[in-house]
Length: 128
Image (cartoon, rainbow, N blue to C red; front, side):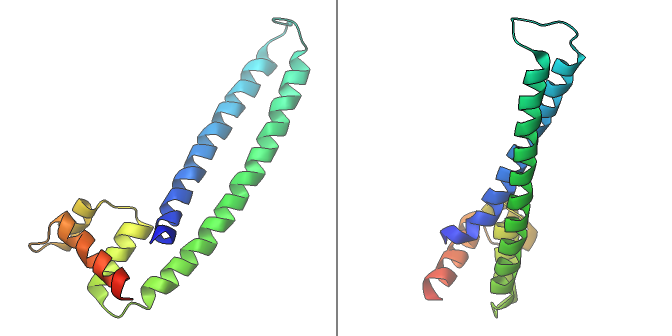
């Protein structure tokens, strides 16, 4: 079950790393716009350090994106092999789209509550 959540967690991690990269870009722009030396040190050294960190972070993000797509394909293959279309829909909405159980229940319609949808998923996993 834990592996099923890895895709949505990895998606969040990529998003967080992209935010971090954006902050680094802003820092480098701020430092490179400075003409004088502030608090000692060389602005060029600070920019160089930030640029190195940006490059490393961009590589890490690209690796995570590759990992995300590998996991996506694996998860999609697993879900595609589920014979019950209702359960396939539940799995896609939960583990690929990252929807809450209540949101899934609303999309599925009928009399299902979020907890009922969660139990359908849990029973499927216990029996397969």
